[in-house]
Length: 77
Image 1 (spheres, rainbow, N blue to C red):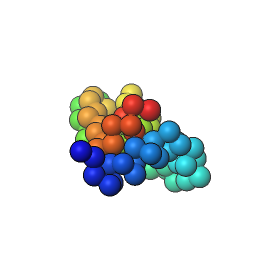
Image 2: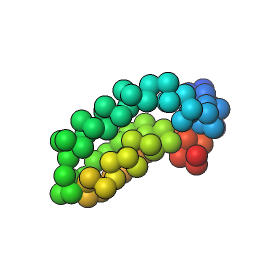
Image 3: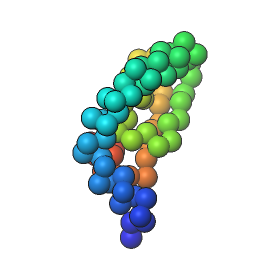
Image 4: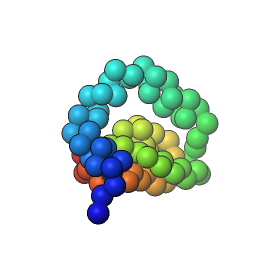
């Protein structure tokens, strides 16, 4: 049985990336800063990854990324 938080994020999943575009400059800055601090020898864990945009953007920078979200619909997007 899904809890209320999972249902909420499952319902938001299809439009989540459009919502993030409102804060695109902030996310680009975060990605830039992460890239400055990472290298191919590192593994990263992204908890609450949403649709996985951040780990995809830095995947060429690190050796391994594990990304998870409690909303299966976010992962499916």
